[in-house]
Length: 148
Length: 200
Image 1 (spheres, one colour):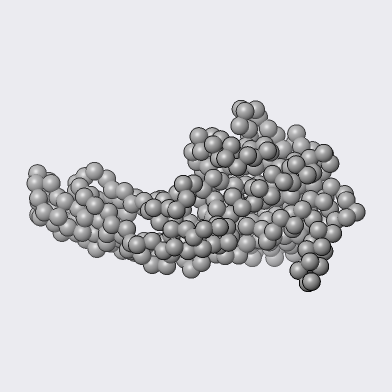
Image 2: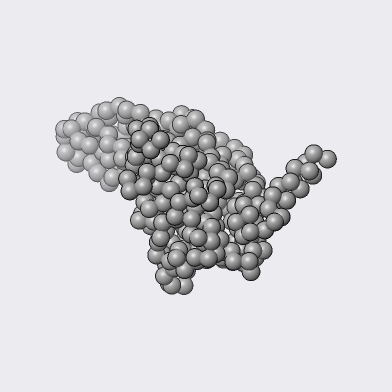
């Protein structure tokens, strides 16, 4: 019985997040100009994350942040949140679920150095399903850029 | 603060925990809407609850061993956890109802922001039981608690009698189990009454 259990049960598995981010297209941008980067997120069925503007103060918002260089993040546009009712909340919550996109508009400083570079982003989220919640997580998002 | 689940599915349900191999005493919370609500296990199937030393909101160190001889409801929770917020009022009620019979609730907060986040929340919800600040270590020894809420009922001998992962089906489920562990002959009457009422 114990041997069988040892073979069939995963000892100390590393759990994965329920949100994944798809490949991000390379951004080619002129010095002094602006360009956009689209982040595509995918949540496991049954789960949701709080939107960037949660309806309750105690909830942790989804947030995409970027490094200060080599580009400047001018604006982060989140999708329109859904209003969903869950067993654990008497009122609907502002959430994202399924697949959704976040678009960031970047500006390349006029004095930016020409050539390839990496723009580092971080997507922080906190996911729940109808019955349980998972701890907040952060996904690193490195974006390849070409400054011309 | 929380670390990935490091448990084996069904340890409690199967009573087949691998002693000394790192297998935890609680089942994997895992992912997906599949909450676990184990019934009170027979005494011979229960595993000893791992000992811990955590600070409470007054800065006092609390050991699980301090509660030997009592039935303990050990609730892993966080302020950002909506389902936890539903269960906390139940636990407040249980603390009040059963404390004179050798029962205590211990809430282990897994908030990264520590007391700064937890203390105002305790006041808002008027929590009447002891709250401890959890850490990775305690999460590890309890199998890498990840899904919240995760609630364990620990018997008077310090052994894990049942595990609930995720929002429970209702407070009567807990109440009956607590009553049973406290040694009441009326165990099960709450659920029976609920069923009877529902049938009418």
